[in-house]
Length: 224
Image 1: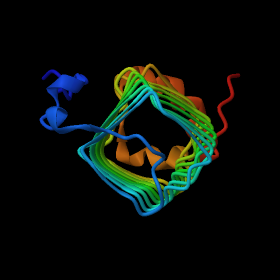
Image 2: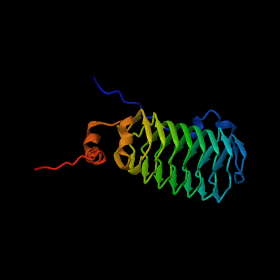
Image 3: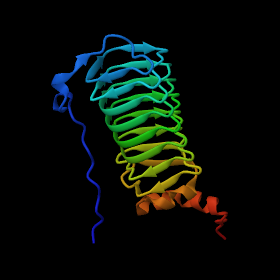
């Protein structure tokens, strides 16, 4: 019987969003505990912005850069992000629901203890991102690069990685359920191989991971 593959999602265009014609420009920096409904930030650069606890609903961020800054406990509900850059930003304990994130770059970001539900990343780059103790449910990483990403102690359920490259990803203490790694371009896992008991991989990936599995189990492989 052929293996059933989950269809790979495709990103929408801004004009396809049901709230696109309601959007109003975001002219000022977001502020702490601010409430932003149907706003569009386009081409903005926010430096060291303190927007902790802010709420974004049915909103768009395009070609936006966050340099540093604090957005801890911010909430993003039904948002569409394109070409957004976060550099050294505090995104810890943020809450994401029904989000599409396209061609984004995250470098040196603290996003531990975040909650992500029904979130899809397309063509995104994660570099040295702290996702420890995050919860990811029904999340897809499509054609993404995850380099030196720390998922230690995280909970992943219904997560997929079609076309994505994992390079130095840490999974120590993570809990995986219905995680599908088939279709990932590379599985560079730095630690936490025991966490993969809740994942599905293909036979080629199994051969690639076999030496690490043996090491994690304390098995010595030696040819005569």
